[in-house]
Image (cartoon, rainbow, N blue to C red; front, side, top):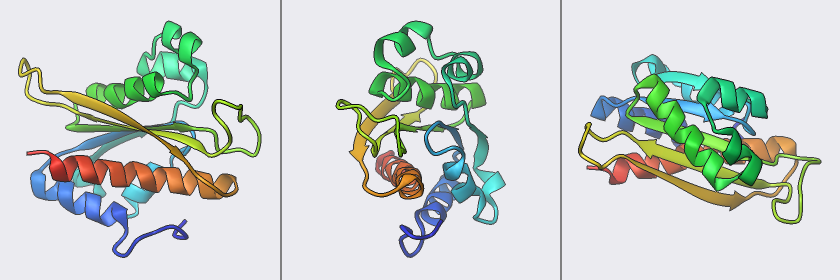
Length: 172
């Protein structure tokens, strides 16, 4: 799982950033199936900043574990910007964490469509600002990854951590 790793790996950089800021993260993963959590927990001391990792893999789990609305799933599908945003917010809010990160995608080899081909991935990052400030945020980015199922999943997991790193670094 280090084929696409930077030096130093993004999981170490994210851990250092969160630790320095005394902030926490919670993760909701679909297509990556726990890889983001595995990367984060590979770093000693991860329990200082990682609250939880949930892996709701089908529609019922998305609905019952993280309360993604049925209407959102029906209208957009699990691999979509609105669902990924809902997952990032739900990860953040159910854990009462500073940050929520979510992944969704089509890892393949099947399951792709013309609109969402194999290799499509979404990453959501949500930040919790102080109550009543109106400054909480959630953003989602769409990506296209090449490679087999394993490569798509690893690239998506590492992209999620790079997006989190960027968000944490740019937040005051």
